Length: 466
Image (cartoon, rainbow, N blue to C red):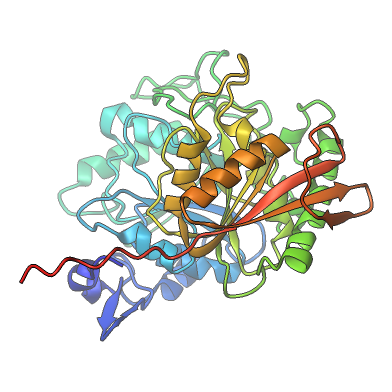
């Protein structure tokens, strides 16, 4: 880790403390210096955090993500995000703790998540000016919050001195959305979003209306914020209370899978396929899922989240990445109770270096190929360099693709001094058996893949200038 500035600045609030050569995380935060557990118990009086009803959360301006870390005990998967601000490496510390976290800020574009995806959204002194730009940031929160979900804001402007105007406007705008105010407890306010479709249009002082019918609320990659509320056709089916409780929702296709061609069948086949693959990785390849060796996992081409679902019994969390140029299936992943983001792999991923223990890339060449022209939009070398940046030393990358692509990937891997193991599988509906590597580009039953390990690279010694 770079340095312990957070311990110096936030130690009195319980964020983090330094004891000798160790960083200690007491579990506190600016609005809960006595610890996240007490704060969560307070919220649980008003929000059903312990019933399986809520599974996915978004923690905005999360600090070192103690709130999301302690919610893991309740089987709640919280994606925590914060910018790289004066606190510098807060997200890096969160990822070192093994807590789902993402480097991000709310600015002029939609956040890279699908609509109606989070069961609750939490802000504890996140300092997001929700009412700025005619309420654009609160409109974005509404886009992300599942019908029947909860909005929790602790800290400014809730009953905050000298912010009475902002607090009044926040309440007024929540009322315009027909949110139900559950409680105001000190500086904490909790609202519940209605389960039915938006109550707009209505008479409100913010000139907020429904978006036009051609608006796709799931479009969120380089998509500017809108000053209108998106209407979701499946609001009733995906609302909190309508969608299955955790863990039942993991293995059942949601209403968002239905519009896909043969969606329910595709869902079942994908789930079964990844159960077999993950089992093979563990038993035959020695990928140490289920041990302390692997905690932070990334699936670069997640599709329906099958890999994450198959690994759910292991002590890991998976960042499911759905490429922005592919079908927008991330909503199905969130309906399963998993988390993820949209991304374009021709660009850097928004995380610190050396933060993931395992990276999986199924059909890696499709991540850089234009779906219309078929031409490469960027180079495989650049994508693998980004994987190298993200992957922790001694971490593992698994790449699956055609023989030609695997040969090219192996050359790149060797050039950046990775340990490379090439494997070919003969796949049937019953089993996957390893075969010795051989070139078989015309055999459709053979799927080769690479198992690669990142090695610790040391800098050469500095010359003696004495």
